[in-house]
Length: 326
Image (cartoon, rainbow, N blue to C red):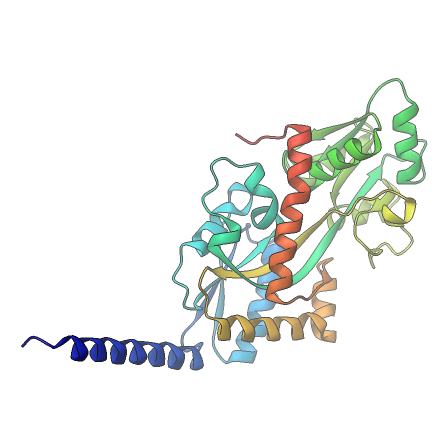
């Protein structure tokens, strides 16, 4: 039987309303099955452990399992790409770092996703600052003195980092470019070898996430010159920030919860509220501090702005230093 134009329009409108009601009802009942959080790095690292702490808290709050699934590789791109391609129904989320959310688009070509278009920012979780630490024999007690030494010496000072394109590498290049000091950044394959050669004096300093270096700084095997967060790191309260020394360097590894593009606003708002409550609570602060993470909170819009600002900031460094991972 053929419908008249008015009847067809009425039927289409009714069907659309039913679909919207069904979608709203599904969101009201969310989550009614396990939720997967994709951790974009290997098990045992700080990002993985943050994801597991969040998963435990969210499971308790929502009365439904939040399961961490590790999909590591390509600087975090593999895991985040999986999230970007998932259905936007709230059952696949991601705990990602600043690499795939801001920096990697200038380092990896081609990128498997566009962070600005293919993802929904949900909540900022926390950050780990870098520390620039020197071999004890280096005649500099602060980052300011280290930079002055780099300007006065006849040859480059060397700074190791955990790998080409890592935030430790970018921060060292940022320092060189913006201070004019003669510094040479040397990529290693991970925190441990970069730190070992700084302790051994094969390089003068190391630029890496603070959590990897704290034990050797406390043991006086390395001399902390500066942390690169906006405020001092609680685990090294006597070490000043770069900014306190008149050097405008802020570089951290930050974690954020994300979802695929089109994630329904009620789900985003619910998760954002609960994650912010966790990172602001005494329990959340203590659990994150045990991993060397400084808790943060932000609205989804603020997280989106941070992703864009950090991306623009590090693009200038990548371009100036001609860093490529191709």
